[in-house]
Length: 587
Image (cartoon, rainbow, N blue to C red; front, side):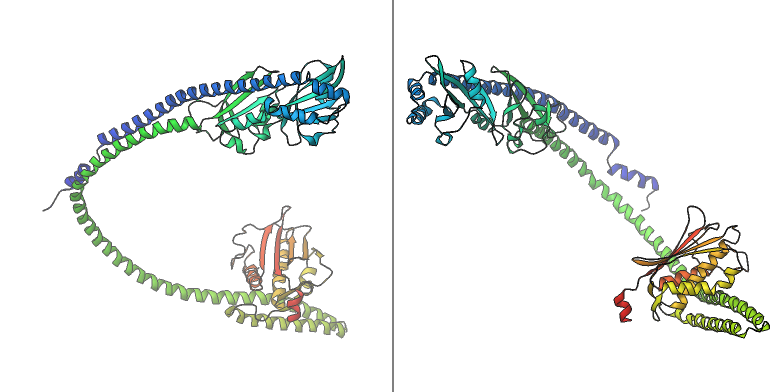
């Protein structure tokens, strides 16, 4: 039975999700997000207020306990300053029983320490017998107690960084000061008790210096410096967890990047203040618990909605059956296209074979052009030397003419070596390498280019190292590269008034020959080393010199680069591996 295209188009709409259902789902998700957001803000504000109230109550309790301990300890020096046993010992300078007498008071009084000083400031009795004989005449407790006839409270910082608190009072007999009693107050126990909960608590004196803290590294700093401490303290880790970034209420302070709730209370003692920092973690836990229930409920409703929608999937089976017929038709069309592609591939193979034959002919032409290009230099030099030899013979100077003939003989050997290099195109280079002095090859190449250099007004500067520069290469091919670079430099400076060519040979990690001219520079660096690329006039060159030179340098294990100089002209660099002593000795 044939079905129309209209039926094929309407069927997916019947089995799919209509836009009203999608709109309802989107509205449901937006509503759920709005409810969760509103619940988060309202619950956070409510629980934050509750937590702040509890923190203020704890702060008032801590402050009351601290003041109570200070007041209780302040009574002890008053009582001991009137103790007849201590006064008698100071008058008689007999302290054999004084330490035992002070120790007997320790359990009843509950002081941290008891110390008795004589009129000169020396410890004559103490519950800690290791202090006996110590000179405390310069201690603040002794000096201040002698000045006034009342209790003196002192907070000193010890070597470990903790503060020690004490009351001191002078002891008088018959109107004369006979000693000083020092009563230590144990306030460190409050730090330990405060550190057992989730709050971080500090107490500052009238100058703002922290004297009590649940975090030891905060002592001795002001509040601003303490909040800037970057270390992760053990006591504060429990109190200052990272606040959730989406908390609706801004934090009062930041400690190590974490937002905390800050509460302050005044301690009615010498201008002290007590500050607590409460984490938001407990608030977030309670809020997140409620939000988790809300999100779970919305997730269940959304899952039920999707379940009802999946029941419509049964109606899509008809659409899939109809679609399978379309896929079969598409498969048949693809098979026809595959057959056409196979036919095209066969035509492509024939074209590739034709192209390969053309490439062989082109390669043969390149090789012929390369031989012609490389033989032009020796032939030109031979012509010059023959003309010179003829002139010398006419002038009856046969010895000098013989020297010219010897040079012509060398050029003939060089031409033979160039023709023999045709074999190297069919094999990998490096088979006939030998130790070669780069410096000597450069001098030999300049000698071969002497006729061309003398025919031009050009300045040649050479910068050479004092010692030989040994490389592993084929001498003839290396000189061939140098001659090609010199010839290119001469051609580039043909139209330059003050032509100059700089030759720089350096030896470091590699042997580098730099050929710099002050010509017009290079127009197309990308195509410079391509075969048959040339900027010369027809008949002056075929564009194979640099291509051949680049191939030779690559065979020698080096590289040939070119660039334009900043002040004009072109710079060519030949880099070859240095032949070390071990390799040279082995060869």
